Image 1 (cartoon, one colour):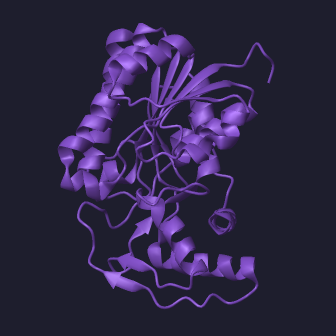
Image 2: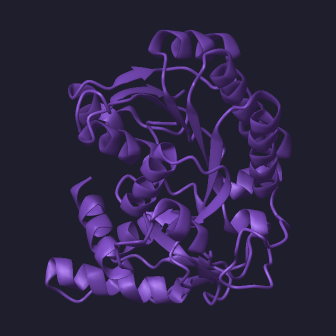
Length: 323
């Protein structure tokens, strides 16, 4: 990338799982990178390599409008990737007011400050399955009814609406990516797709995994590297509105258990001594089936998932072994 195409970028939630992988990719592409993270769930160590390469970490909460505005005024980003969020579905059900405060007010602060400082592009990160709820159409397109079961999906949907409002009223160029269940290195077990990181840890310790429900519930597991590629493409594009990012494939939790065991056997050279899963009661606010139709991402962003579940699990397992 030449100096003329390099961008000044800011990543909120950049010390988290997806955010830190995005920061690395932005640096690889030659961009200047600043990170905003309150480190409540993000981890400073996720950015150790990025900081050595020139990324700057600002320990700021997106709810602190004045502090966030100071950072944006200093950095003068051309692109903002907004990933800071409350992502725990269970916590959102237990404390919906806190969930809404972080996910809605935090997004409003980002959008308003982007307008005030002339930011060229905002890429908002949202959720697919949690917004569509019990979808009748699988894989689910963006046109499907939005019927979230958990407060988390409700707050993220509201944040999306504010992106649309900011675009209509103020001309802020914003696009929202509705992500499927992202997994990969640095994965945080708080999110729905955290099951992959948890299972990898359990199989390496020969401990029985816990499955909430009967294990037949499905998710659309998409590798973090593919998600990052979609985010970069979304920043450079002119498209607005919401775009699904996933594989369009359903994988049951029981299938993930088997796939993680196979990956562990291949990595260690020995059969996994993994006890049978422990079945627990289903958790409130979680859907039974979820898979996203990513046709619009293919058409508008040129996005095609490049990483198979087998390959992605191998990389994830290797990362878990090394930590």
